[in-house]
Length: 204
Figure 1 (tube, rainbow, N blue to C red):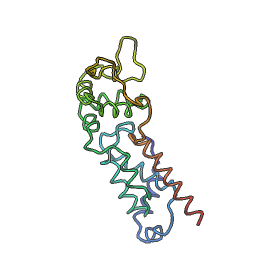
Figure 2: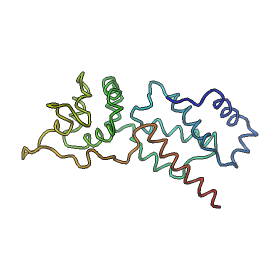
Figure 3: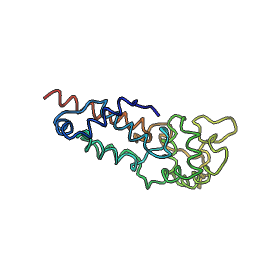
Figure 4: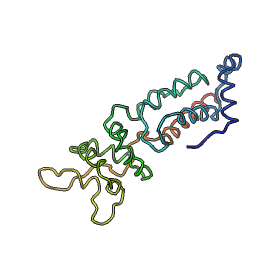
């Protein structure tokens, strides 16, 4: 993960722990550097969690609380941002947090839109059973690639066929779902929210 450095950590710690600074800061709109620094410290503190791992609301909710308490700001669209992050109870989160699921996840995490595609598969008939079986395979990652090798079926082709025996089609399979699956995706959305708030504040 990217780090903010010891100096940045010490400055952030001082600003959020000193009562006088904290009271004054409550009247000041924080810089993006403060927001980013707090977020980086939070995500780096998560045990056994890598930057490209599938994110869940359990990792994001505490960050919002820390932002509110320490830099006295939180995004106006906090609820919407949280809604876009997968719930901890969702099937895909539960599967990829298992021992075998984590191994599979970290092998495929660099694949473009991998979580979007897995999410769409999990919502198809037979999709959850497919994912459960898939992560048990030692070479599961080769089936999850956007473009599989010749003679290697992709996830859509592995779905059980319908009664008419035609190949399955998953709508928008190769398109983003609009959800926030990773730290970087969440931070990009948070930055957009921050920029909007900063623009509104500047216009006043």
